[in-house]
Image (cartoon, rainbow, N blue to C red):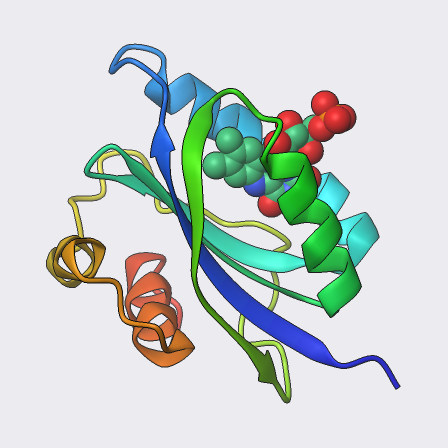
Length: 135
Ligand SMILES: Cc1cc2nc3c(=O)[nH]c(=O)nc-3n(C[C@H](O)[C@H](O)[C@H](O)COP(=O)(O)O)c2cc1C
């Protein structure tokens, strides 16, 4: 049986303020159908000049996506801060979701960016809060 992993990475956005929302919308659009094909689900946000993405899927599917992401020039300094095996997907109903435009920065995520916790749980709680998903 395939196991499931959840990972969270942080990267530095290489987008100026004017193009940011358009790029984010593009990324979510492409990710929605590509992730559905790959059996990946996740949450993506852009806060304090960083992308933070939580991804769930088989280890092989996540490794392949991470490889692709390294070639995407819209970000750099990609760093996986937490990764663990999970029994079940927590993000359901979406292959990729992002908070609505205008959502204020999540204070706890700003703190976590300063000192990234190595455990998945605090990221999952904060990221789900951001998209108003029950924790
Ligand atoms: C921050 C960030 C997150 C992304 N997340 C995903 C994702 O979850 N799934 C995905 O397929 N592409 C994602 N992409 C886009 C990929 O890097 C890539 O552009 C896309 O998969 C299309 O690949 P292709 O041009 O090789 O067809 C993301 C890009 C960025 C910058």
